[in-house]
Image 1: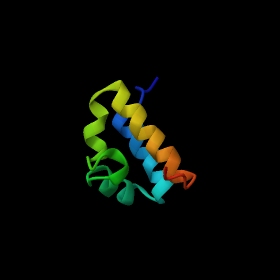
Image 2: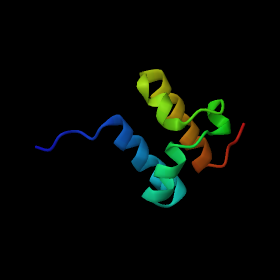
Image 3: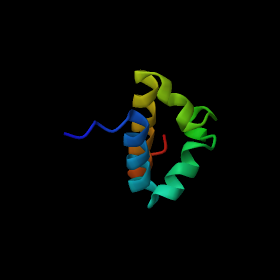
Length: 67
């Protein structure tokens, strides 16, 4: 049995689907995002609430819902 992927890896996989590749997703994770109060997505992954904020933000990006 393999270990479960880390939260950061799960978010990175989700971002790779949204942005069309892992390299673009990694770059996005380390840049400030307007939809995340100008903070880097990776900085939000320290708490369960922050993880949910990033997941929700990625879902909105995927479906082009910006407000």
